[in-house]
Length: 457
Image (cartoon, rainbow, N blue to C red; front, side, top):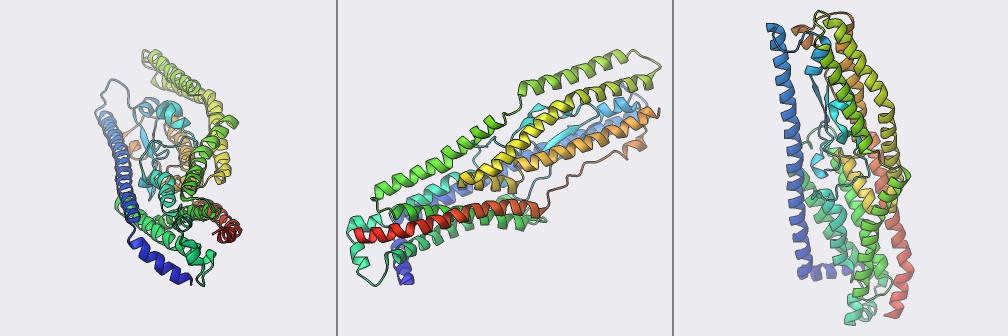
């Protein structure tokens, strides 16, 4: 009888204009979000490419000045050259970078021999994991916030409509149980909505993401679609559980919208509040003051040393000592900031299971490479590279060597080392499990209610 219920429901859905209207609206939203996400990713990439070209031009100018032996500053002094030349460390876009904006703005860092913070700036250093890009219209927003509403619109009257039309008693007079009837209707609607959603999601990624053919691209896509499937199934299970309570269609709709408000809006907001109370975000003012002080002290020292004619190496060494002293002074504060951000992210990872929306959102930004884990990994590698960059010039300064055009060919280069796919898959997989288990629990809890609704019918 299950398949009989499915066939009858299929005929009913084919004539249901609301279904096709909602699916068309979903398709339009996905298309718009995919275009918006791809445009944002391309804009960020173009900005980074422009910055890389600017640094390459600057390097070419320094090389020309070394060859000609002219210029206002002395590019042959390793310490001066280390301030003139910069290397742009770039976080390569993930295969699904167009999926969610997240913390995608923190994807590059300008590295010189100056203080690490002076080179990069305060904004990228303090972007925390609890900052949600709620204003960004991307695929993550559409699926996290709007997909549940579509499911609610199609499932709030699984039983109530039959009861209110007086046809439920006639249905139950046939050799079919109420449980089979409800599951048949729910499974067909889930198959239609989930199938269309996954198809739209895959098509949007194929059109908007440029890295699907790169290593890991298909694995990331599979993880993303798996998380999206689990999220949709949770909301269908919630709809079955609400319908099993025997309310009217209006009551079911209000109850499901209330669940959406609690799980998608209220709980994530409370989690963010709890995280910020437990681990207050770093002070922008304090960090900005440190950056400004570091830059000012280096500029004052450089101005004082410009009149030290005939003693370029000692002047350079003294400036190098100033840079190292400033970094030593700033480092404990920066370490405290980063530890605070890491504590925030760890707490978010634990509390995400309180809300299916948080689970999906964390999985999406993780796979898009715009989450807190990727940002911290990039930040740590940039720190290590900054040490290599400064050491390159400091070794020559301490040895009293002049910089030559040949030295520029041996400048260190930054290469980001991504997180192993297995670690990311384990993190996302745990989130998928955190969606499927509550969905199963909701279905099991609805069984007694379905029997009660049958008696009331």
